[in-house]
Amino acid sequence: MGIFSRLNRVIKSNLNALIDQAEDPDKMIGQTVADMKSALKRARKDLIESLGSAKRLEKKEKDLQQEAADWEQKAILALEREDEDLAREALRRKSRTLREAQNIRARAAEQATAVDAMKAQLERVEDKLDDLKARQKTLAAQIRRARDQQPDPAQPTGDRLGGGAFSDLERMADQIDQLDAEVEAHHLLEDPKRTELDARFRALESEEGEDDVNDELAALKAKLGG
Image (cartoon, rainbow, N blue to C red; front, side, top):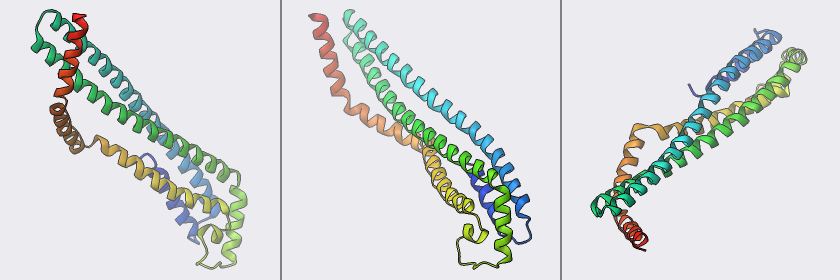
């Protein structure tokens, strides 16, 4: 289940329960607050895990940059020993490592963006929860009055229930749906098929990058010769 799916399920199930005339509104609002607190606790844990993933990707990108620099030094060493074939192979490996680092950097940026979006959304949910808790008694009374008046079912749920906070929660549920879809799409980056496709493109890039390797080899030879 996605990081926000639990929150969405809590919101929608409790809103549906409040529409049910048999439910006590004061009790249901209190249950909504308790359920959302529990869901938020789990969501914050998921957020920390996602942040950790972003940090690990950043570290991996730095490690790959260092590895690329090491391959360049090995190419220089090979040229100093007059082993041009070995130097060319070292530069090929440097090129592949840099491409991998570039891909990791892009994934890290996407992960960081997703984490920022999660954090902002959780903060909005927490604000709504504080508002809901503060207005619990007032909203319960409004809902009871709205039920007694037999409101028009064509009205928005929040208006029928007599509480604007519930209209906000409905809108928030829709927003969470959208964000959860975006986060899920981000996770597709880890899909094995995507990994296989990336590997095939890297193979093509490797073939096309041979000229760059030759150019870099020539530049290193010129530098050492100078």
